[in-house]
Length: 138
Image (cartoon, rainbow, N blue to C red):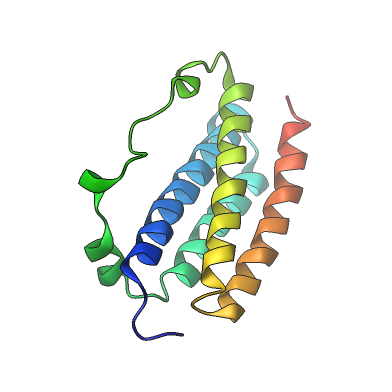
């Protein structure tokens, strides 16, 4: 792993790691509290914890130091986030958020640690399979 990671790269990792964990937690809670799927709940939780573990191989203190919400030109939420009509919409929107964020993490970790990037890619495919299984429940 590179010793001095660019601050802008750390900002990308920070934003996407937060986004992926948040989205996974929403999917996890849908499985836990709405669908009562114990195994799938555990799978979402395991993916969330695994991504946190491997992505935080970069010093978390450095990631936090790089966070710059005040200068983030994309910090304001979009109107589409307010248009959820049911649990299915919530699940699918968050699943999409997770996939996009995992892909961003995968791409930018290629600049830091190719082995971590490969592990993130593998996790992305695990998520695809889990998403399909749960989407069939609605």
